[in-house]
Length: 120
Image 1 (cartoon, rainbow, N blue to C red):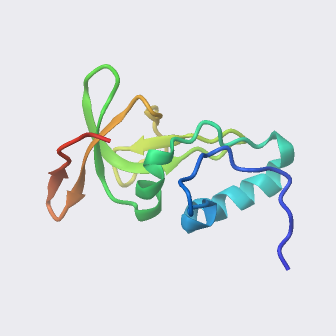
Image 2: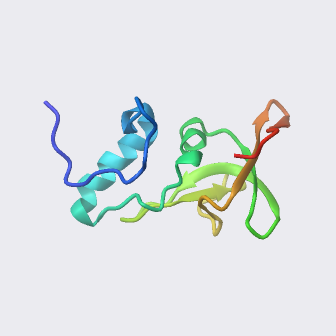
């Protein structure tokens, strides 16, 4: 028996896709929704970073001010979460919050970054 959560995800998923397609984020969402109830909102989550939050892969992004940064995608723990760029593996927090203004340039493959022809 599944329990009805007091809140709904604000992320717009593609046709045939839903929140359960991302198990790590789905577990986080259920836990926080139960903890905060109607106050919880994932409106600050950028869908393009969900895949990298799930996989833990290192990515290279271009910040809105032009700087190229790299790291893994983490998430804040409050009632209105957002994705963070964690630049070191032992990092406990980050001041770099990821949103739709950041362009994904590539992902780490082995010891090198595989760059995309069209940034996401």
